[in-house]
Amino acid sequence: MNLQFFRKNILAYSILLISLWTMANEGEHASGWDVEKQASYGTDSRVDDHHALVHPFLAHMGMPDAAGELSVRVLSVEERNNGMASGTYGFHIETGIVDRLGLHLRNDGVKTHTKTEMMLQYAVLRSDDKLSGISLVAEIEVPTGATSNNRIENMFGVSFAYLWIPTLAVNSTVHYNSDDKKIEWEISFAGRLTEKIYPILEFSGETDQEMSSRSALFAWKFKIPNNNSLGLGYHIPITTEREFESQLILQAEFNFH
Image: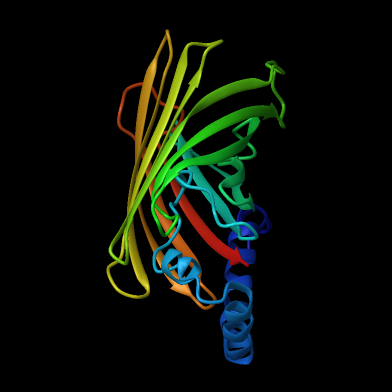
């Protein structure tokens, strides 16, 4: 096997091995998980309802996770630009800190995105099941890579979620950076085709005083044991302003309670 190819795709191989290991151990731990979950959450149906669907592919959740929940999305990205292909990896970690308050850490391409997002999300309006509603968000973007711009960016905004269990989840976030007069937005539609198969459509964009760009992502997620999932997505710009020609993304999502 070509050593260079292996190095570029080592994250994808790791995701595959972890997923196979998870499936292999499902039978051993399934009954114990059910008992533990019931003991921890009692009759609250939030956890079961929440995981009837999947998280967005790249976008933020519109509402914070329940306190004590942790979701980890790991990405392996093949990016094409100017006819050349390159590889990178990314992550999206989100957790519920206390009731109504969540924390997000996100970088969709560690090698190409020189800043990592850290976002606090507070639910101000929510449904009785706590899954749908409106949240206020405060985000900083911290330099974590080689860049000439070492300034920490501050953004504020609002996010929205509507879950129609078990058919559709809509999540959307809008940020505003007052220093750069920049608006960033994203919206995700995650449907349920079968108990194991979930189609996802996402749109995102960025607008400032000099340029405006938008992109679309088409993806599928496939449920594996313990409410985890594997996903495959295709991400393309839909404006002339663009940072890449296309991205092929392999994702693994792991959920902990």
